Length: 426
Length: 174
Image (tube, rainbow over all chains, first blue to last red; front, side):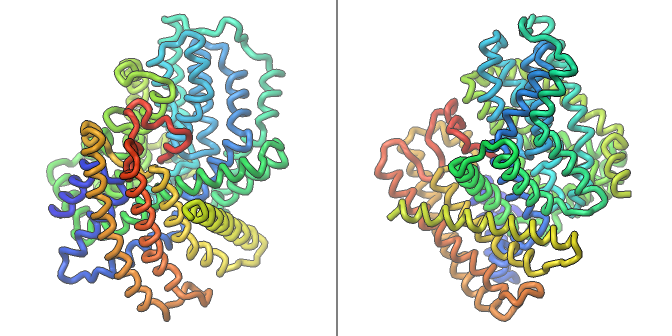
């Protein structure tokens, strides 16, 4: 394992694309091994593509781009604006609600953060919100999008860890809503003190709210359909992904009449690049994943952790703290692909439900993309809005505290996470 | 020539993406009505790996593959271009080995059938050598492009840290 890690670290520090670093590190195992022919390495790459659950990844990426080109994001924004812009910190609340609603149609945090930085960011700055605060709200609230189903991170965790993706999806709902609530409270408390408020916004009448909801009906309906169709295993998450693509095209063309051929082409182009970027990492990680299992790394880690510690909550806390540190430097996809096979057995051995652990793990590693020094969501938002990272960090602390509280709550009350999947799947 | 390739790549990728979506969608609908189509999902699964490599090549030309540039961005541009050139040459060697081994594996797999569909599993394994060669070709194109320019790199968008992520739309990750 020493040589493999060395190759990975050197390539990563030199700035090689992660997919290539992971591929060459995994290939090192086959070069070193006396018993493994090199053609098995190729076999492992090809085998990854034969997983039906993984097909959900391209589908939900494609659907996400289609939703943006079909007018769904705009309508959800207008609905959120009518609903909460009258509160203290109105636009910040809009951002948080919009992330939650987008969570129901899309599964990628960074895509959500980029969209909101373009749509809401400039308006917040114009209304006098500080730059750091604006960037912090937009970046941190995108964590909700990554938690509420469909969630690409949860698909990957389920695939690698052999955990039911349907259960993980259901388990993400309550934590997502908790994050929404806690972030809204944090935004409200700060905004009230600083006087962030839109003087012209008024509390909506039931009529106005209803009209905005009706306007966004196709977007609001989708998460309901998603939950109904996955419930009881009528459809698998991959099939729902294919439905999502068809649904987004139908809504864009027939429902909103906004999708043109040019916009469809743009969505396909963006989707192809994203699928290629994410899937190359996943394909190439097939070799390293095999090496990790073959070298019995999970058992060793489990033994080390479990001999020292007994209490499951302590074990999970230690693991989460380590994941948080790793997440500061390493992209969440990589952490999920490499560490899930190691950590799921640890969680199981400690008596922690792998669904419960998955939600905790995904929250922590996704949080890594909102922190310096290597945070994709953070850089996206800060660069789109021209915010300095120092200002972002200072202003994001209350929101990190809010997320931290959510993690503590779901750590100590597994029932909050598990009652929905248990109720739906028995 | 390069324009033609980009166009062909886009059309192929778009067709495969649509086909996979359609195949899985139709299979799910048919199963609901009691007429399961086994070959439909098998075919989608076979095309999946081709989609991945085609997308990966497109992302490579857009310099969209994620890397950690925390340390390396401290170097001046010329030094970075040398470092990336070194990584590129190493990657080309890696891809060449994958291509050779992939062809060997494919020859072994011609007899192996894919599910119940009658398709040969070789269609999946051959994607690794073909994909590796396409990817290698695009690395070479990026190398030429970087060395002809005064500000472009092979893998990374060479932009100041603040602007690094600002390029429209190309920032997606999980």
